Image (cartoon, rainbow, N blue to C red):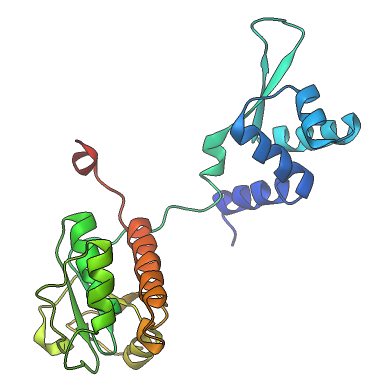
Length: 229
């Protein structure tokens, strides 16, 4: 059964599902504008513009503001908070985190170090088939991005402390562990991150760092204490 919040999100997506209305939204992100200004900017006939504005207003995506100068004029303003409803907040990762990949030589090491740095909370890493060393490309990427891998060493899952949450960061590890219990926890998250060691280029490792950081940022909302200067 579809709940009311999901139906509301679908209505917002529906209202935005037209190139003309998206163009209006993009224009209003930059500046509040009168209908006349919007029509001129977008080269849109007044009847079509009125139709799009009515649709957006019906879904509470815009509001019309009376000019404080010429009271006969109206300005159109985005209701920005409505756009926050397009996607629900991602469930946050709480407690200690264990990042797992196959060799524990790149992605999981980078993820654990970046998690500790970004959140100030504990994280560890392990591998299903640990390599002998951290990949040189991962260490080089860490130096480029200011990530601390100085003490990083590949380890088996059995060698690390149990964690509250397990995140697999490579498909092979996720598939190996599917349905199995590790460190007394089920893997609760999977981030499908390509193996930078497959090509071992700087660009591949930098891309892995970027994707990992995006996932970490989406998985941890700073507390007010963390946001304080």
